[in-house]
Image (cartoon, rainbow, N blue to C red):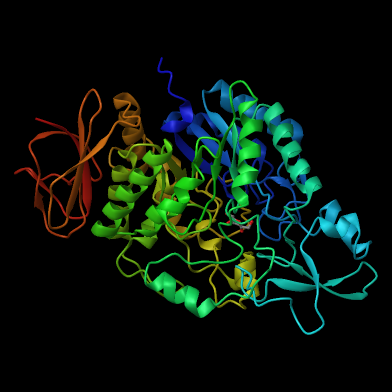
Length: 541
Ligand code: GLC
């Protein structure tokens, strides 16, 4: 047994409860549904699951609007189900991360309800970011979900108070005030509540956002956009503020007080790999998502630059990097990487065949990198982004707040196809599904792919098996000198492994060695060339 902590090179699978499996047939996934599929998850070869929020919530932002952090929404089950999920996962050797949402509460949270019944100067008002302003919002901040980030504070009896409250997301998600001691104590207590129940750690929602510049200065959005175009650090007075690191020092002490210590992964959209690594200093978060890598897309230079910068800056703080290609907030990578994909164009027709080739290639490349990797449910089935969701079925607040201009994130949240040839494809035992599943998903069902040599599901299983067998851990990555469209590196583990990806269309010459796994059945030609848009792992000779 290695003494290396499990999380340093784990493969962690994101379960999005509303779309994973639905035990009670109401069309919305639930905790008993997840429990019923734990055997599938363990057999996939992952080390842990991260479960998106299932807490009590009006579901205005799919559960990221939490009304009670210590209870389960009846639509998803109850506390006993949460306990059974933790126990069931542990029995199968899987660790469990839950999702904590500390930047905001739901407006149905008891704290916000108290605000509506109190007034300026009250304890209730101090828990949120509330400001007086006679002539419009206190500053020009925009909500991430479009429109202003401030709404008028109107009391329970309908009185306009002349005050405004901040919500960086939906107006039903007021931002809490992290300068308030009670807020800090409450979240520390929520951590302990779930740690005591046996959860192994937390993914932290909007981990870079809790602290705001106290002066609440206006933002120069034009300059920020320009800075982003030029690739330099965007600065916003509500992201990546120094004070947020103090919170994580306190949280780390709490996590370390458990045996075994609990862990964190921040949803940290830091402006650069350098700023990101600061969150992983030894007394802060264990890991953070590495969105720089996700954004590198299908671009050889960008991928290499992101990997190199990430490794460089994480090494400085002694932390393992993480890698991720898909989650519940971004277009599925089979679609995003495909030729013919255009963001926000619901009429675009991405090439799904080449999209799958690229997605499998980049996934294999990712799984060979040092550190831990996050997978998003359904990517192991090769699911695509769904564009033709009827407007009436869409739920994402970003869609509603932009009057449909922003397509939102529903397209990557369509319930999983498990079996059968008609909706709900085994998502439940009936036909209900909170978002409609496309007819083409019959061939993508887990059951249809099970045991099928070339299927994406069997490819994921094989890659995860080999990754585990090779226990690549955090051994050093050495780039292999390539030019053109190839990118290759060698891992200096006990049994050396070489990973080679071809970003181009044309076949390219491979170094000599034995191919261990390929992203596609026809990736390696008879004369030892690596086909375009494919990736292999090999034992070099
Ligand atoms: C995070 C979540 C996203 C949610 C937002 C507000 O980015 O991943 O789904 O809408 O935070 O909580």
